[in-house]
Length: 307
Image (cartoon, rainbow, N blue to C red):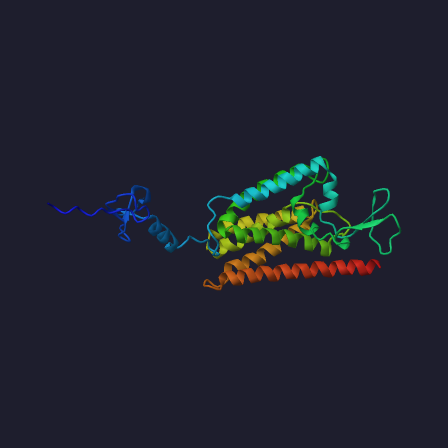
């Protein structure tokens, strides 16, 4: 009588007979555990281990590659939602627009900020501790019947954000892209606070978009792109900055441009080794601290001058 042959089973499912081995670890695997490989089949664990050992693609500045402009779409969506909110409740603009210092009287009118204001008046803006205005103003736009452009303000900004944002997101990776966008928006608001009329409201994503434009210029030159095309792009950006000086808040545009360019330089020229992410993050923290210090100093100056 011949001896009964040994029955082999799947290492993950002991009750299932299996006669196929994983080409990597040589354990028996059942059809549910088989994964196609270049040669034969591999088990689930070997496939996961192989995926961990594959080096992930990185952008030129070390970020994770963003195949689709998800973050750009989210930013556009936030701007559009904020605009719809403005249409429903116009007072949103007065509450969240970038504003340094202003008084609101008992009649609801706006007045120049002075210290020791009488009863019935109250301060609004950064001097009243409304620091969120430094960022929220970058997500608001001129109402349809107001401002130089009206509804064209948000339309032009969102078209520009789509064009330059999706390119920048692919070049930077989402984390670095978001940091640069927000810092550029903040830089635009801070420069407005420093040199513009503190009682004037300011809205718009232009500062952040100019920051993205500066980043594209820096990175394109760093990668050795077609310098004629890159220089034409930067020339157009500077030309629009000059034209906008008589139409919109050029201070916000210039502040975003300078901040975005500075952050992009740190991204592009950080050492390409294990220190790169740390250097880039440190540069963002330094820029943020500098902007915060400038804003705090200007607000302190406004407060003391009005006292």
